[in-house]
Image 1 (tube, helix red, strand yellow):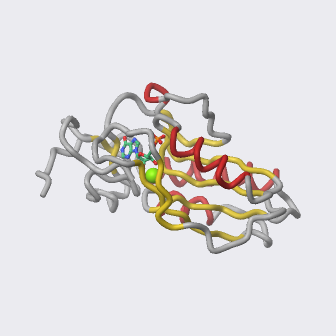
Image 2 (cartoon, helix red, strand yellow):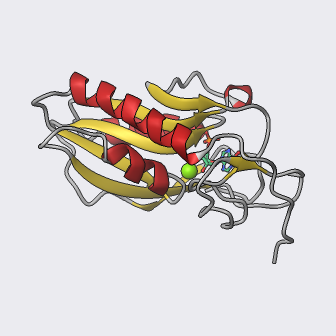
Length: 185
Ligand code: IMP
Ligand code: MG
């Protein structure tokens, strides 16, 4: 069992996240007016961001689905290999797919998922991440929409976990000390 670690200060509060979801939701709504879109949330980290964003998608043809994947290994650094734990229920052929993710760190997960889903004939694929951590990048992946940029810290809250804990925090924070074991899911 992992030890409890000190939670840092509030970096991004609920009001800021809500405002950002409204802003990005409008961009997506305007861009895909009258088109069929499917938001694909990546479990479990994206649950809160997905729910918040979804409230601001003004499109009667919008549907949602979820996938679960994990990078092998169990450290606060991403290992580089991606495993699909739960695939989509929906058919994405001919639809505009928007992958909704909590954070882009190395970019390995999303680079893999984008290729994986592109094989199913979607009309387009975009990425919408709550957070972007550019200092962790190991690929050339760029999120089409992202809420906030973060630095070289282990982020928790608003869906993001450390060893499956802290997801319920209604704000974005960080671990004071992040060099111990954790899951990166
Ligand atoms: P990737 O390194 O971009 O492939 O990110 C893989 C996954 O690692 C993300 O979807 C997150 O779930 C997790 N992750 C990366 N950085 C953090 C962090 O700072 N806090 C919590 N989870 C993280
Ligand atoms: Mg994730």
